[in-house]
Length: 98
Image (cartoon, rainbow, N blue to C red):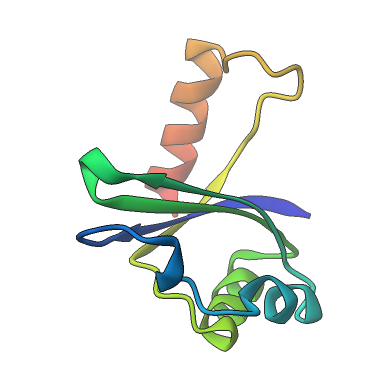
């Protein structure tokens, strides 16, 4: 399964803006919602997801009624540490090639 970061830009972030049951709807589609992060100072909301593919994640997000502006495949540091600069450059180049 891949890891994906969904991003939404909104004013006046509020947890009530998340559709009720979104986690269950995502799970029914085979997508796990691991964490939702609000950044009020940046008017941004992030959702960390696991899904079989980017298309699977998009389909589940739509079914769950989540409003998302961007969706990116991400790589999480397995040891809880930082990605090396070399790996970050490699991932950026891969993203540019898509």
